[in-house]
Length: 126
Image (cartoon, rainbow, N blue to C red):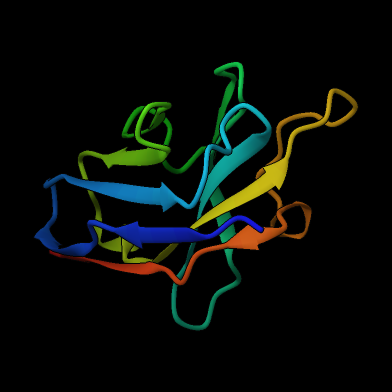
């Protein structure tokens, strides 16, 4: 069982930055794809960024060039660095993991991820 705990959310003005942290219960990075999702009120959950064990990344078009996903193997942590934040980035952000497979391409689809954290709120004001 993989347990994921997010932190680092908060309130920030437009143009500001936040760094989200996902703390995994055990060393998952060698065997799991990791991803960040977000869900705004009244909207579907969407994949923001994903990271494979060998360092491949995938980003939603809406965050390319502004968000960066990375990891710290020693600390079992995954990060989402968010720069140039916009009001439309306001959402609950979730960390997710799924077992890695050479037969699957890196995914940002909700249905492909098995383990989920409880989320951390990000609010960007104009």
